[in-house]
Image (tube, rainbow, N blue to C red; front, side, top):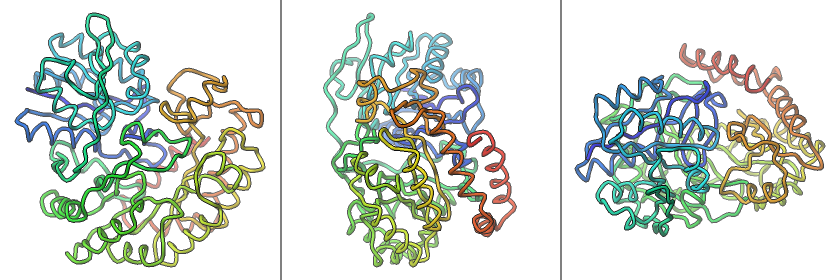
Length: 468
């Protein structure tokens, strides 16, 4: 079977990150993540003997016409499309365009959005046949190996105008069974670290998160139960990428790398034991780090950690069901900085029930803690999250246009704040944080190559659009 895996073209000019829960425009970090789900799925299919090609239209700057030309040369039997909430209308338009051009080719999509809203996704496309629900690798493999769609767990499909929903697929227990991602299928030099000229790859470390943050939809994709790649498997992949692909920078991909303290420490210690000269970035909850762990990370090559700070108001954290405290945020940031790590804050603005004064309280906390970088996101009710169900049930969204369901826009109207107020406060937060003289000097100090300066100037240029 010939399978073309596709990260669709930019929709209405927006370069979209489509990787599980990460559904933001590239402008937020001036970078698009390498397509991990597609690369893993491609590796699984190729190991089973299928012929595969991967087109990441975002970084390859492929239009629909360019994608059609790639398909014409490859002649696929199946096209598998990645998707995300803000780009879902464009993604399904691309499905229809390719099906019209290649009537014999079958069409499937994957991602959190179609998993959470299969009926609505089918309604957007005349020619979409299959939705792969949840983590895609094993489901895609079975889909390619059968003519009986009714037997494939983990899909919804349309036949003769009737939509059918098969039982969910059990999560893959032994993640070490997955091959290394097929990164040879992408143009690796096109994926550069934010504010850097270094190519990087995503590195999966674990799947699933047992916490119940109301704004998060990740459980739709990977479930709530924590499953882990073994430390040996993780570092084997790092060694492979360094030696075979020439990549030495990594973004550890997980809802939180530190959900299992001993596992995270074991990964760091394995990197140290093998004397690997690499750099990496990870994320964590603020209540799951300590000095020993972070110092081990630093010795293993970690140079930055991101924390889900979310809010400087304990009341808002409790509304989110975040399960952390403001004091834990203070302590985690202090400990990471003392370990020699750069620290990024991930902050949410406009959560239902939050007041303007509480947003200002959050901005003040981020400034006080002296982060290296900060991301201020508007609260988004992504399908699959408890927040989505809540705001829909209470008529709190101002639009059904999925383009605006991303962190640059506020689509939630509350008794406390109008959407435009939230967007203005978010823009004020960005300016107030990054335009301080001390922060400007700190950011410039990280720019050590011409490529890093190019990335920084690109970020400044895009900043005027998405934070303006």
